[in-house]
Amino acid sequence: MRLVLKVALFLVVGLSWVVVRPGYSSAVTISSKAKAYQYFLLGTILEAEGDYDNALTLYSEVLKLDQKASPEVYYRIASIHIYKEELDKAEDALKSLIARYPDELTAYLWIIRLLLQEDKIDESDRYYEDLLKHSIALSPDNAELYLYLGEYYLKQGERAKAMDCLKKAANRDILDAEPYFLLGVLYEEQGNPNAAISYLKMAIQKDPNHDAALNYLGYLYVQMDKNLDEAQELIERALKISPEEPAYLDSLGWLYFKKGDLDKALDYVKRAAVKEDPEIYYHLAMIYLKKGEVEQARSYLGLALAWVKEDSKLREAILSVINMLPQDKADDQERETSAGELNVVNMTPGEDGDI
Image (tube, rainbow, N blue to C red):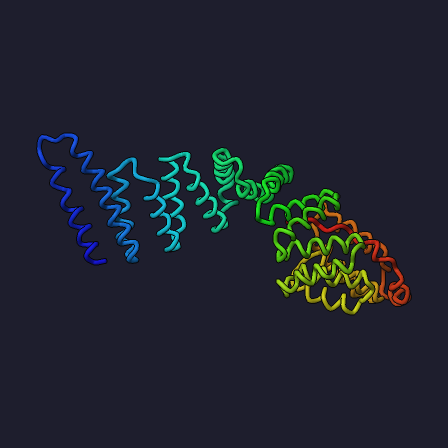
């Protein structure tokens, strides 16, 4: 390796005489390109040896010497910066590549993934959207790009645009389960449970270990009071993958509530309450109310109301239950024995629907 390095250095130095030789006006351009090529070769050797700083120096010289340098030079610069966790510098290198080669699709994909890795999507705003749209124009059948754009629109709260992009990803038979899962969530939000179930099943078919899809489908069945045994199997599969996920613990607890096993219901939902979530608090309130413990129920309803969004269906359900409660402790004691007979099962709202 060292011998090859010395030969490469000799070749680089040996090219310099051409530049100053009189009578060859075109030789400067030729030698610049040739020198750039030799710098590139030497840079690859240094990069292979782990001498990244000197490799970067040589690659930078290549770009100065050759205005039409191959995209590979930029990719090598970006790769080294990514390896060194200098992601902003990697992004700058890729932007320079796009400026010189506007139709270099791979460069767009690299930037998109860097932005996703850095979680800079909100900061990038329309820049990220423009990157994706331009990439789609270059590669209109790339399902992954439609998924990224759909996820971006979800973050922006543009549900209709998100659904359109996610459908395009799904229609291209993307291997990733995510667009099917997200479409299931969106259809459930719209009050179309049959379409939601269909897409959630497709997500699980694509990825049997997609714990979010497993839980979501199971919880949807619980909310619909159907297929409760299947729902339990789905939620328990999700919990095997993520045993301490509060949403999954809450789902299983709520299933036990629907099945009438209040002790198990309380155990799981209390474990889920490490997360400050209005729906979990609401479920705890309903369990305590069914058990006849009205004051505990009142306490958790208060917490749920404090955390719930103003325009959610869950808020309406919370207020409805609060209005049914007795107004003072004396009344509480008189009505505690009958509280367990309230039909609280049918007072549960649909899922809040946030992604």
